[in-house]
Length: 366
Image (tube, rainbow, N blue to C red; front, side, top):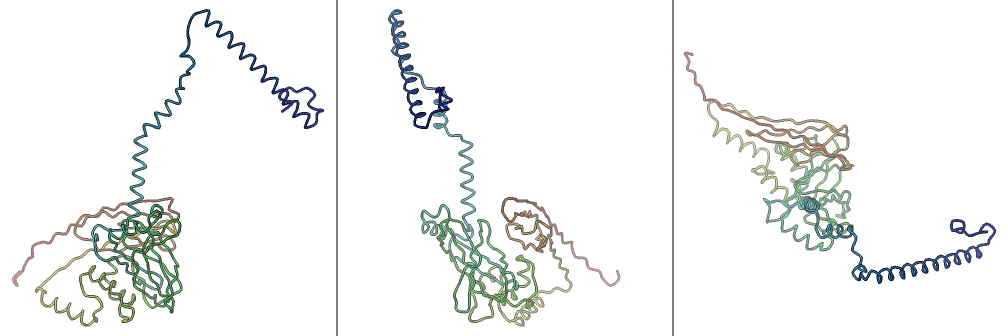
């Protein structure tokens, strides 16, 4: 400091001598500036008197233009920025809302089904009133709350512990959950958890137990396959166990497939045979179509087909089999990386147009 300010002999001074020299130099420079400003003020006053001009308004300096521009920017918010903020807030609220428009009222439920030894299938229905109750219960914690599906492991003493917490979002009704070390008992709880860790439960599922490995064959992860194996899945999920039978599971499957669930196989076959015998024409031809969608993505990615999750194998391959109704449909297939930073979407537009021709009868002379 002394060197930069031009203190002479600074290199031979001690610290306290340097401080005194710098302070003395500061006082000298300040006195010079004050005397210079006083002489300039006297000269300006003399000039003003000699010219006979009053410059009273010159004392008020105008505000810089940059300050005016900044104030204008504060007063007038950018409409594009406001719109982007509103859109982002709306998207966040949509992802947070896990209720469904066709389930405005009624009982909330989450049903857990066993697909095989290593896969569970959770399906839920939540009313909008329950979302409003959760919002009121979490109060100031609602802003950071997010919907989750908790998988609870249940031991023999009915004690429960959280083994998985899955982030879910609006527009999804079901989730496939991989589990390890069968046989084990599980229960699912759906609700909201805040950033502070506060949890508000919406509904608890039935209790299921995974079978020993090899006790059941693997099935495809979609509802059409569930329809073909509904009684088997019902039995694996505890439907034939009088102690652990789930009324929600039975109601869900019966509503979904419009037929009784859990009846003895002989009674079901007898009803089907009676119905076919009563309605069977002399000659018939029935045709149906199934569609297989398969592909490959990055290992560990999450894949959904029309919003429903698809099982992805360890090598990234996936395959889904489904019925193809007689109409035009669009199937969006979305793959998201494990960290959620990348997403790819492919939309399949499929149309089935079936035409039944007029029957033709041939007599014996043809």
